Picture 1 (cartoon, rainbow, N blue to C red):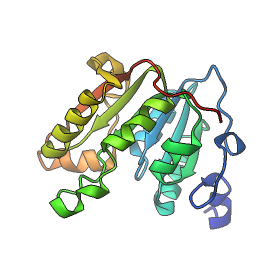
Picture 2: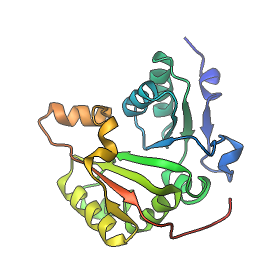
Picture 3: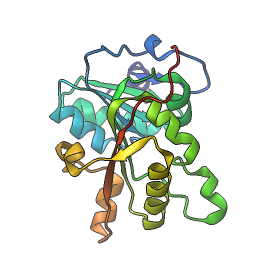
Picture 4: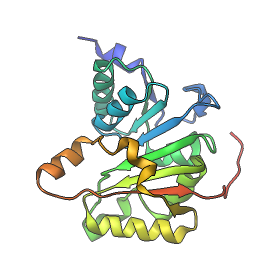
Length: 210
């Protein structure tokens, strides 16, 4: 069994410090890059890593314990194309990642914070859509899924009123349709529906220097 220090060597701790992404992970200009944002226990990340060895997979989550589980899953599949990022999502998307660097952003089954007094904690809000658009390559895909119908309705409304995206067809995420997060597997086992929606990033609305 690997020791704790060895595991941490491959997990980039980005929270609570200013760092350019290029300092921790090189993104080749011709690479196809997938970001599993809020990757949880890593079921979706590991499936992508195994299926697409030529793609670079970024697995990001704020919880270090989850990142260690993700790495273990990927190692068991003998994949080497994943970079592990322990980081707050808003910092990663708003500051750290370079402009137009990601082909697809996957946000799957995030906490819906269903109580009215807690909804300010939701990741998907109008202020977060600009960073999603910023990091996606022009025409890149934003892939979202949730088991919570109210949250899905709210996100659809926000995205489609933002002017930053257009709805994409199912072909945009067809290659990952069979991959499930652990949360989605649990909801499906309970008989819940977990719809997936994809949007395509429109013309860049922001240009900055990194």
